[in-house]
Amino acid sequence: MSFFTDKVVIVTGGSDGIGKALIERLIESGARVATCGRNFDKLYALQLRYTNVMLHTMVCDVSKEEDCKRFIDSTIETFGTIDILVNNAGMSMRALFESAEMDVMRRLMEVNFMGAVYCTKYALPFIMKEKGTIVGISSTAGYRGLPGRSGYSASKFALQGWLESLRTELSDAGVNVMWVSPGFTTSNIRNAALNSKGEPMGEGVIDESKLMSADTAARYILQAIEKRRRSIVLTFQGKLITFVNKLFPSLADKLVHRFYYKNGELVK
Image 1 (cartoon, rainbow, N blue to C red):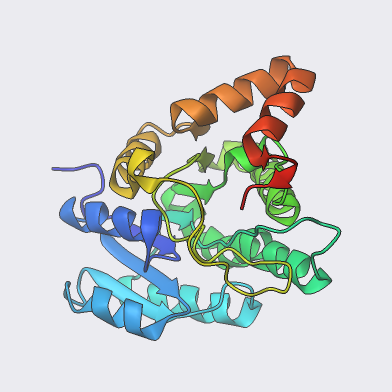
Image 2: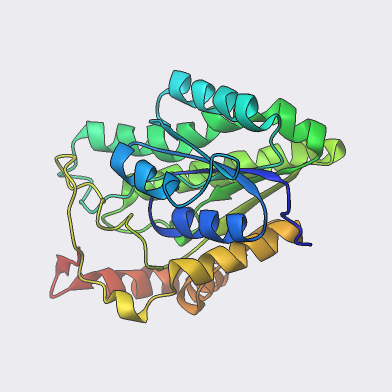
């Protein structure tokens, strides 16, 4: 029997990338899963693969508090409780701050930070009752600010600071709170990254064949949940930049600049 057998797990933003890979592995392990997203067609395609007994889906924009409340309420109506919440829904950006419209910065904070806050707030009483786990899918950008991703970095710094506070608050309640920094993985988040006008950028320049797969990332995340870890950083590059930034921040400045700038231009 798997650790996840019969556990009720919420994965926000489960129609693509790491979220979708988590759902596939969780259901294979016998978990009952609830997920949400903004794209009905993608959620419907996912639902066709599984029975309603194993997967509950709902169209939801996590930046809207009422949507989050309805999603959590519907999960309780469907499965009766919540053991694990994975705050995975998120978006990125690829634009210099000087040219980015304020709606872009606001949208990133609303989705990446407030979306996790809303879902956690309404799921918390049930997770506390089960002495379960709250997870935030963060980024190496939550440890190190990245050029052209200032709003994204800010949202992930906020997410990690909030989760760290929550971890301390809930330690006596037996709830584990952890955050995950996937690094560069095969995920739709880059394709959907916002430009300076708030429009999806589309394909980036990164060669995805060299990145960690979403399925591999999901496997590491589930192992960390089972072990009730505090935090994990995935990929060698992710581990390297967080280590260098902690001990040698000036060197990290130079390395990050070299990676993201070519011939004086930001690599998007």
